[in-house]
Image (cartoon, rainbow, N blue to C red; front, side):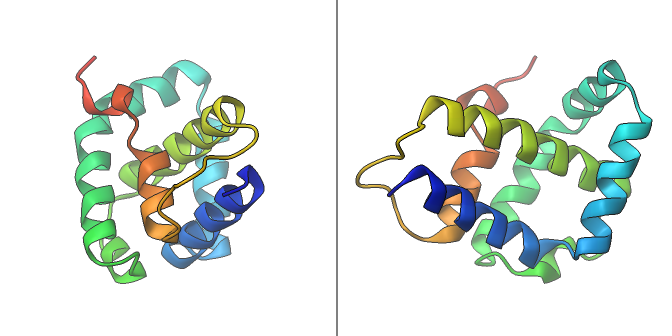
Length: 120
């Protein structure tokens, strides 16, 4: 699968989880924090993000899984997605052969890298 297809599939899943206004609100809140504050939020919410990603994957990407999720966790998930997606695209600029083509699987692979599994 080409890198562009991987990117498009992951964006498709994010659009199913958060509306455009919710995504923009999360990005706005992240921009209001400095880089250090966003990094602290990622560390604080690391395990919660992992659990949320697994829950979303088990629900086949259902946006219903985002109901009642606190803003801090949404923000941390969005920040991680944007950071990991950038790293993923730089690491695999030509894409990956034999990758599971399921968009939710691709998104989950981007969301939980080995670095995200281990405590800081």
